[in-house]
Image (cartoon, rainbow, N blue to C red):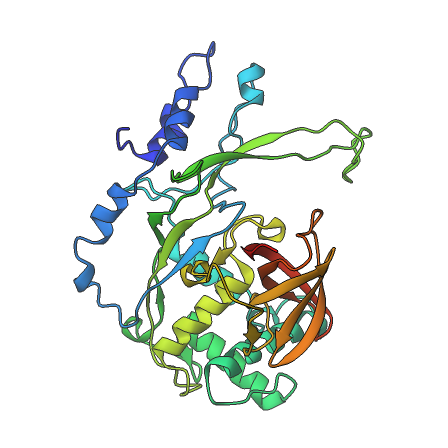
Length: 373
């Protein structure tokens, strides 16, 4: 197909000028059939060696159900049947290439949202900030040799200072020059892996939200009322995004150099996701290396890593939703959560852990078949 600018298709060609036919359905079909990233590759890689970025980029892959960015933009059609079936939620496209980039400012804001200091001037108490101190200290401890205690006043102050240094360019109440601040660049799609039919890749597809309005015009949703499907555009799963930054070594925490700071950002993105509706699964990412799963392990593999959120774990089905895993040489049992048709007994699967509290309060998500029984 022709390499039309997707943003132009979505915000211009999609709307017909005549009231008799408001929506140009051909435009959305052209969007859904985009299989190449040639326009953005041509722009991004033409001067790749001249960016001045002092840290290696990293790549992450969108997961099911996909990525939704720019949902606050207006894209509403409300007249006639075509209006009912129109794409009614906005989307963000790069102005030049029309590709679904994630703005660097959005990445910066989403990452900072997990730091506690910015909330001190708001009407929130410690029950809101304390989990953020705990999370950030845990992530920093994982990537450095230091041990921060999230309950220690001195360590909390250090986290606050690190936050201001990283996101505001402020150290000891003095602003750094623009040349010494951390810069977040836009994340761009660089590869479309197979995500449609058997071996085909798609960049965009349509999806639906189905809110249930209360019959009495109450703000509460009513599960028994007639649904009102709202169609929108999304980035498909299995689209690889490249994240780039211009990062500096931390002065507040010298153990965090530019490379470790990059790892910290990546860990937060993998933990929280980006874009809209992350609470229901959109905007989540995985590491490309996570797809390199051995297909035929001879037996149950011993897990020797740290039990943490989104770690990958090999398990064997015992019966029904009950599974077992070898954790550092010790057999432990868990439950598959959200699986209506569990594999047969003896099947080896790989799962992504969803840690709730400490062991053995462990739930499992994102199951992948590795070896059938």
